[in-house]
Structure formats: structure tokens, C-alpha cells
Length: 466
Image (cartoon, rainbow, N blue to C red; front, side):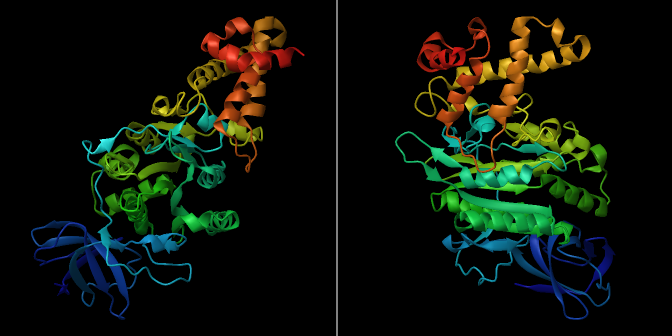
């Protein structure tokens, strides 16, 4: 039952305070009728002793404390879902912006979903092939995982995201490889970025198996709070009701957190670290923990959140809290970007905590773990030697050290670097790893099993000597 009030007490930024309200519920949808008849959406943030704080989705310009009417609908924010959402583009509040008809469905789901119950979770273990060697071979993505990309302003995180969306396939024992359905949510992006995503998805045909939610930079910042929840609600329906493999890309989570801070300031809450609200960890968890696999369900939700680290600071609250909640991180490097290396993924600080669950003889290849560890160790030593060369010069290095120094350069130029359309299989990535390892002494290959070296690596050492 809709209840209408004309008792606006105060308007503070995007928050409208209404007094004398009975039975208002947290997250209840509110309709705001302006004096000129224009209608806006809102949501109940807080209610105490008849005083309700309403968050307005949009600007509060034109609202009047005496003439504005507030209608409480008695419902939470819901989104209609069906298979018809595939291939569609929506605004950040769920309104179709592609010229198509509204989604008509009897099923409307509350967007304020909960994290997956830990007792219902199944262990993720199916390898996802992204076609990018630094991810597939060294920081493996597993179906049902949440693996964020830590970037900074000016780096090609958007290009990497659409390449993964275009190339990602799931490989499971006993199943054919299958493409992912992509749910893409953009928060606070520019018109140029929105055009890039749209054109790439349309050009490659990926839009046919994608759902896009776009909140632009000139859209209300408050709208960014609901954009990822709309996307995840859609993803959960496609995964757990329609048995699809869903890849959710969320960009940019920094814009989302800035909106959280804006709302917190409007509510005059005591700020936490760097002005962000103290409950930001809990709020981010309510988004990230909606990824996973569920016992008895064929579909899965895999998350790839993207965030730009303010001032390139990985200890900033946003990447810091994200790293606590998620299962690793992919870190982009400005140094590699300046060298024209794409994708500029720095493998040393990058990590996939679920990697060992998704690799092995039946999922990738039996030598995967050893090759990954050996490549990481050799590259780390080569990077350390670069710092030494800056002090003593390359002439002071031993022959062994020169080979590791050379390996670091070749690793970046051949293994890390690959074209924006180059889609490598995991076998090609591992073979390339063995080929590069042929350039360092055989007695230094301490992290690979001898039988794997005989089976996969020895032929590349013979070719290297020739």
C-alpha cells in the first residue's frame, strides 16, 4: 500500500529527511514528486522514531520542503529478469537505453541480494582460459572466483577487461569448452569509455551474450550504489536459475566507493580512513561475496572487479579492503606500460589464491604448477639483478647472472607482451614458458620435476642451443 507524505523536514545534499512517517522499511523504494510534477526515485537509508532519511537517485535541485510529496511504495528495489536481458544495454538504474522495449517479466528480484551462504558454497576448481598468458599460466582464474584488477589512471585496464570478456572460456573435464555470458557494470565512466565498450562488444559479437549497465560520469553519483547490485542480481538469475556460466566485470569500484563516501558525508557520519565510511568493508563484502559456485547448481558467477588505485597507492583503503575480501589480485604496471608492453600485468605482486584448485593434469597440464613457479622465480631474480646493474654495471655480473638478467627482458617482451587480439591457449603459454626457460642454466631449474622437463622442456633446450 502506497503512503504519501508532504512532511519534508530538511534537504541535505542527496538526502531528504521526512518526518512523521510510520512503518518505513530499510531499502524501501520511494517516489519523490516535485512541485512541477516531475518524479524521481529514492530509497530509504535510515529510519528512527518517525524520521526517515531518503536517498534520492539524482539531483535534489528543485525540491521544496513544503510542496514536495514523498510516496512510500512498501517495496524494495526490484528488477525484472528473463533471458531477454541478453544483448541489452541499461542505464545505471536499470532503464533500457538501447532503444529496445522494457523487460517484461513476472519475475522481479530484489537487488539487495545476500552473499552466498557458506554452507551452500561448492569449492571452485574449474579452469577459466582467458587467452592471456600472465593470467592463465601464472595467476590462474577459476570459475566462481573473485579476482580484481588493480590499475591506475591511464593504464589499459578497460582494454584488458574487454579482451577477457571476449576470450574467456571455461574448460572442465568431461565438458566441451563454453563461452561465458558477460554481465558488465560500469560506474562513473566517460562517454568515450562507454563508446569504447559498446563498439568493442558490438564489433566482436560479444554483445549478443552480454548484459550491460552503464552509469556515466555525468549521471547521478548516488546511482552508482545500485548499479553493481542490479548487475549481480541479473548475473545470479542467469547463473543459478538458467544454469549459465556468468562473468561479471565491475568497473570502476573506486567510483563506487567515492559515492559511498559522498553518502556518508551527507548523513554526517563519523568518517573512517581517508574519509571513507567505517562500514565500507562490509559494504564491499556484500558485493564481492555474491560470486561463487553453489552445490547442485550448474551455473556459476565469476567476478572481475576493476579499481584504479588513487595516487597508485596499493595501501589505499579501496584496494586494501578489496584485497582482504577477494581471492587475489592482478596488478598492472605503469613501468611496463611505458615500455609499450601489453597487457602490462606485473606478475610479481599479482596473485591468485585459488590457482592450485584450477590447475593440474585433468584441468590444464601436469607441468603447469612447476613451470609457473620456475618462471616466477627466474623473473624475480632477473628483476633484482636490474637494481644491482644500476649500481655496479652489467660488466660486474657473472655469466649466470647475465642469463637471468637477459631472461627478465625476454620474459617481458615475449611472455607478458601479446597482442590485443592474441588469444593463447594454456598449452601455448606453457610451451612458451619452457622455451624461455631454455635460456637459463639447466641446473637452475629447481622448481620443475625432472620427468616434466624431459617430456616438455628438453626439446626447447635443444632448439635453443642450435
